[in-house]
Image (cartoon, rainbow, N blue to C red; front, side, top):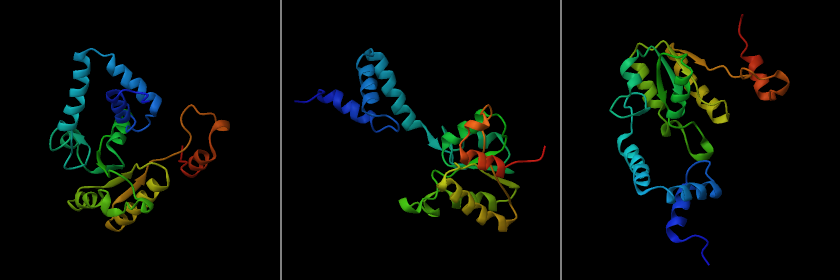
Length: 197
């Protein structure tokens, strides 16, 4: 005997394809949609279709954009480029209101075990941007995991011979964290990345 009728089962299955959504959460999402008014469900479905049709990648940096070029690339100068893994990383950095340069989205990190090498992410495009001149610094803002560190080191090795200053975001203890509760990796990074006062 089937647990769910076919339309609900198919809806649950589609929700489980989203990152971090297990079967119970997918069921809750499906039931929520079933209980929506027809207008609400239509608006929800249209917002998904419109986002898929209208969101593009910026031809300059690779960030999300409605047009050929994103607003950040249109409005800012490019003497400093912050390199990130994904467009969602741009959003996180923008929320901090500390950076006023441009970005370069790699759309991944190096991962030889999964067959992701330099040609599978946007490293060539970064080098092409830098070859146009005017770039003084590249900030590596990839995640502090094995793949992010390897990617940052690889890109730094390509840029240093060009005379470009390459920096890495500092990592360490989060503001408000008691040292006794910080993990060893964060403490190690905090000590290594210490700076003058």
